[in-house]
Image 1 (cartoon, rainbow, N blue to C red):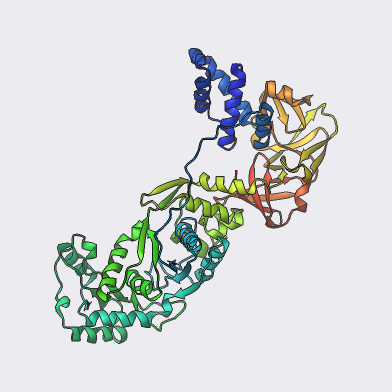
Image 2 (cartoon, helix red, strand yellow):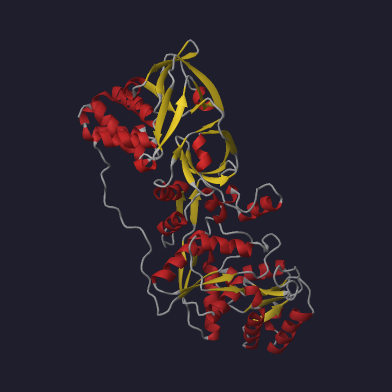
Length: 554
């Protein structure tokens, strides 16, 4: 194989791996590995590689696939380590739980714990309980009434099986019962120290005077917390070792008073448990056998174990997983909530929220999200995954179902002098001939995108995809030929287009909230809301209805 064919081979293979865009460095490395002598003239090799990549990167993914098939080449398949979740040491009839705080919908960052717990529950024929962690939150992080339904919608979208739904706000009497038991065991006390004094004492390992009150006094003050005391006047703390190596573990707060109105139980309760206490009680009372949670909750786990030991309860098996960071996106539930409530975002499914609702509306398949989460594994190490990893999984699922169409954003009308009238025929899908073809009646006037128009250069050969070749001379465009082979040999850029006629005007909503407007071919009038299509050389989109599409990904 001569050097040009070798370069073309590796450029095509590299482009197929990276969404149609080959990387010069990778291609040069592969060429030299096969043809070491090419290293003798790196300047000439680099020139040839860059020229070839320029042509290949201008092709659509379908065109690249066709060229790969023509050359009869394929990527060497290296045996990959199987991805997935490891086996667990499971007791009979396992029970897992997820405990979302209802301040908004679940987003892509929340999905990991949900999916992993659901996967294990299904694998071991166990149960998965949804526990709404709706104890009263802080002023900054408060409950949103609609979040309850939004969380359920996200769970349903991901195909998770919930055996029961529990609301912590309905279990206050249970928490009060066990709080009183702790007090009677001499393991908890009512404290009147200010938050500043509490922090100072804990950091220095100093016991506050409240700690030494009698059990009888603490029982009385606990009743006063439930009936008389106001917000900020008293808290209930657990007794631990005030010399514990971790100051955060020293006499942690178990209950506090909050007089804010709760969206479900209104003002019927004002004394609320902190999360580790309610978790400790519920994990025992609900028969939870396996807890899978982020390693950011390791302190809460230690406190749960401490409480279980006080009551003599068995410990569930606990696994802490590393947090997953997603490269390329920023997720802030509090910011999203603020923007939604202020009307800046279009709703909880605005693509900028990265909520599960927004992913579904964009055309991200639930199975792609599940694979993305499972591939992050159970490691305790923090993992950073590129968002492209999610898109790659989704592309595998939608590529075959997505028919092809042309969309021209920011259209510019051009005239190609001498272009003959013709009927252009394009496949609805390159791999499914039975889906038929799309046809355009074209003459000498076309719409192309403003971006493509701005890149036209003098005396360069260009191609309208599956239509014709043209050249720019003295500021005008002239018909040159029909043959793709000529373009392949001498062409500078290939582009999609539309015949200059009355066409559907559409909008595409992107993940950053921006909107692109343009024209689409007539065939989009036949698609239904919810259909996922591919605008060639633009990206996959889900049809939202009323000539509006949501951008899925490239």
